[in-house]
Length: 287
Image 1 (cartoon, rainbow, N blue to C red):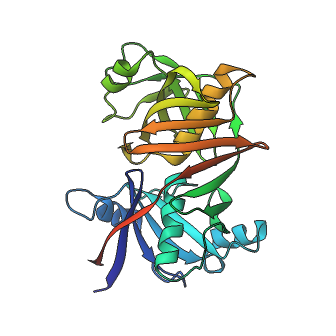
Image 2: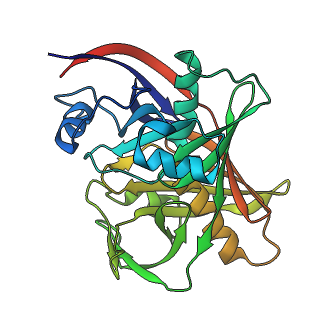
């Protein structure tokens, strides 16, 4: 029997199980990860994050080729055990975990490069939050159609790439947003080849206050279900509403999710995400 120490953490309610494996010697299969993430029979989480040095796994070697400063790799898996390219909330919690475990020193105001399956991302520490450079984004020309339980008719969705795939759907008002049942995965047509996170958004009224755009969002994450927050989904939502609003739309946005508020800024073709991260408790898991 192996006893695995872990830490639980969250970013605006998007929660994760994290454990340290610098040498890359601990391999957990998809079934084991799903068992650990199960909220009734396991620890419970939206995803699992392994802290491993980039030099000690194949995906990490690719990250080091992209940026030799990316010493640490965020090995992230969804709650169903499937690997994911990137997690905007998870990477903030991951850096907090590295600092907590004394694997990383990062004074306020400094930046660290973290390897992920979606490339290398810079994370800057502030006094009470982190800013993640999610990198370049893409708004696809093609339009999808999205249906969901308790959404009266299918709606058009805008595919947005932020290191992982998203489809963003605008709904009429807060009541319609709150009434959607996201216990069942929305259906996207045409179906994305690797699946997609689906975000439902309501633009603020007024949309812009003090030069900052405002959005409310709910999300169904592929391989997880509805979550209280999705960092890359928040960024994708801001990108989509900005795209719909036209050339005079602001570059800074506040996005309200069930777990709190996150900030988005679009600068030099990149999208930046700012928000908090917290570690909540520690335990051990018997393998």
